Amino acid sequence: MSDTMIDAAFAPAAASVAQGLIPGATLGVVRADGSRAVRWAGLAAREPEPEALTREHWFDLASVSKVIATTTAVLKLADEGLIDLDAPIITAIPDLRQYDVLNAPERRITFRDCLTHHTHFPAVEPIYTYGDDPARLKAFVLQREWKAGPPVYSDINYILLGIAIERITGQPFDTLPLPPGLTFHPDPAMSVATEHCMWRGQIMKGQVHDENAYALGGAAGHAGLFGTVDGVLDFALSLLDGSGMSEAGLSAISTPYAHHRTAGWEHAFPGWSGGEICSRATIGHTGFTGTGLWVDFEKGLAWTLLTNRVHPTRHFDSGIFTLRPATGDAVIAAFAPD
Image 1 (cartoon, one colour):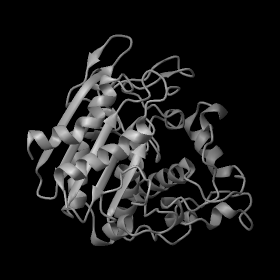
Image 2 (cartoon, one colour):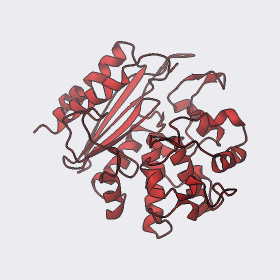
Image 3 (cartoon, one colour):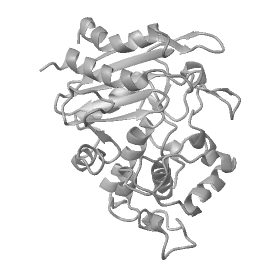
């Protein structure tokens, strides 16, 4: 992996940083043989004082937590025979909608439905506005009668999966075993800053940006994981070389199920975040804070683009939705040209 290749792949992100659209960005690329290249530029924080970004900084991965932590944990439990993906999630959470056991649609939702966002839950719900006690908020999620709607991408699916993992393992979600470079409890001094949160009255740095995850105890099934670029690349490599997941698990995350979704991930489709020239055997996932991970199994290549595009505010057009596919195309063009 030459300097010329990674420089070309990083060019779109470098331009975004230079134009002031995002404070900082890190791009990491890894091949199935373990070779990797990393570039970074810009700031880990603009406010209250400028802080230069380094390779060792922790990024708030936001919804990339869903695939690295939660999906992986669920599939491992399935491998161990502790979860049947096609069984209702009440096999792990029997008290879900416990006051309407005969009619509540939530009691018929399966683990696979949650993994693939094939449920009736809303896209957004400000759970954090209902209180500040994590146990009570989890009870609220479990007992609320959720308004029926068409299947959409919903954090509620993964909040439920996180609760199921806790019930099965008997351990808090934020104690899931993680390899080096991934954590629920980063060093704030080496964490990338995210938003100046109006609710919490401060810039979030080393604490999860997602309000619901914060209110649920700091980490939940949908958000709360932090990673360095090398930690994320190590995870991606474990998928490429098959060391991090069983054959059944790899099949689950790479096989389309519904609405371009696999178990946890998105599968490549026209107009998606991973660009247009990756193979159709590519999966990916993005995070609200400006993060993302994509794995092209056919080309034996994966890349992660990590930014702090919400710092100091989300209410600004960072261009992230054009930067991501542009980066994907630049990665493939540089590292896996046809």
